Length: 159
Image (cartoon, rainbow, N blue to C red; front, side, top):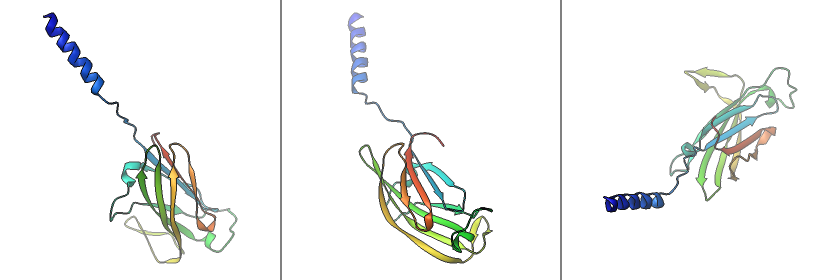
């Protein structure tokens, strides 16, 4: 009986030694975009859903409607802006990198059909591809045209 108990304790001890602690953190990517005349548009999505894959692009849409009472710097500031940003994450050892590109479309009117923005944009401004390093819980600013501020942060907090 003592021998059987000793073998059982040894097996349990060896199983404990061989187990590797796993990191069960769920990482999210928190993004925020704001034009000089709009309110901030914030999105938080699971980082796993934005991992880079062949023949696949991950996009996030940001509405940037002008707010009443804001001073306009240009005629484009008076228009409804919608930004389409393509984000692909590449995991790294301790850090990740994000490839970010997209376009900013300006519309005369904000009009939707079946929940989708429709209409012809009066101007499209491309956002060139940028690769930015991401460190957990440290925001990174990405420069965009027309004075638009864009920040990206990899976080382990829940939305």
